[in-house]
Every structure is written in C-alpha cells, then in structure tokens.
Length: 293
Image 1 (tube, rainbow, N blue to C red):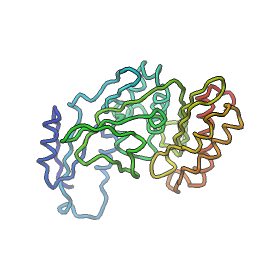
Image 2: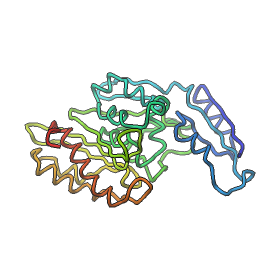
Image 3: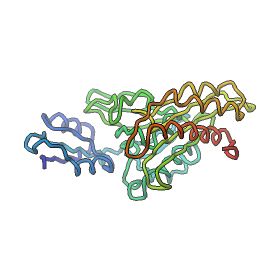
Image 4: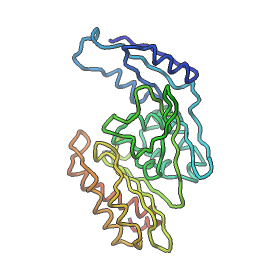
C-alpha cells in the first residue's frame, strides 16, 4: 500500500494550511466516503507502491457544512447533508420534492445514511441520481478556496466523467436551489427495482399557465460524459399547450443532447431508446398529467 495520511481540520484556515503543507501528496477531501473509500481499497494499477505519492485524506466532517434552510426564494443545502437527511426533510418534500424523489431511489439505506449531497456532486458521475433533479432546479454551487469563495452554476460545473471546474484545493460548501413556481419530477431506470445504479435517469421541470407551458428544463443522466440539459427538448415545450403531441415532440428531441456509450450496465442503443421514454414520463408527471404516462 501507498502511504496514507488523515486529517480532520475544524475550520477552513486549518484546512487550507493542511492542504498547503501536503506538498507532493495526492489530496482527497473526504465527505461520506461511500465512493472514495471503496476506490482506495481497490487500487489495482501496476505502479509499485513506492512510486505512488502519499495520499492525504482531509475530512470535512468538522467544518459545519450540514443543514437545510430557506433563504427568501432559495433553499440552501450544506454540502455535508446526507441523502437520508434530504429524504427526511419536510421543507424539501414540500418545496422541491423532485430532489427527494431522486434521494428515495439512490442506493440503499446504509449508503444513504452516510453519503452526502456534496459528495454525490463532486464525484461527478454521469449516472449520479441527484444531478438531473438539481439541474432542472437551476442549482448553484458555492466553492471555498484559499483565496475566497465563488459561485458556479451546476450546469457549468462538470467537464467530463469524474471531472469538474473545481480547483484541487477548493471545497464545495453549499448547494443553492431555486424552486420557482412550477413542478418537477424525477425518473430512473436501473437493472433492478432498487439499490442499483442508473442505466438512465431524467428530470423535468414545468411551469404552465392556462394549460400552456411557460418555462421548462429537462435533464438526462447516464447517457453522456456528463449529465446533460436537453435544451432543444425543453424549448419545444415553451409556448405550447401541454398536450400529448407537444410532449412527444419534446421527447423526440432529447437524444440530440446525448452521446451514450456501451458499458457494463447497458448499451448505447438501449439508452437512446429509453431516455425519451423517461423524459416523457417526467414531463407528464411534472405537468400533472401522470395518468397519461
């Protein structure tokens, strides 16, 4: 095994001093650890251990990054808030149930009790269940680095599988979402009914007036290198009556934004076939037309 070092700073000054002191080490911020720790346990590359740099594991547990609160028209969720805490939040169930729908379908009890929303985001998996829901809610991320704080729209955060615009010494501290006046719905397709990774997942947000769509956002995961906003599909709904024809037209445009691959969970062909189906269901549910799904 390579050398591992563990730190648990209790404020940001100590955290960034720790980061600065770990010259030559691979820095990993530790939230719930449900993705990171198994990866550490399964290091299987052929590099001799003596040639691997030390890994510095820096826990975020003592930084006070949990909690859910309402601030005006926004809802702020601390990055260390667990998936179970999201499920149990009456505020989220009332204001943004789409995020709770995604949490309900994510992993199993043991993982949800430990995994954090911030970790699910920073892991940057294209199949992460919370990401389509957060994207259609217009989520904004707060990153804290040695030189200060910055805001990044979630839609601009991911650059590839496991890759983000966050610097190596930046920590995700808060997720801010904007419920709006519409409704949203999350849909997931896995290889079994529960405790499974997504083959495809999707979310839709719909605002309407008098049966006409006034705003829409659609996101699909596990069908491209990053979770994708399907802008053409969403725009096809805006200004149109929310009838079967409009929904089918929008669903038919979803694949323009996608570029799935074959992997252990599915084929690209199957993802291209099923993504429009999940989007159609999400739109109908968000529009109050679930009986037609």
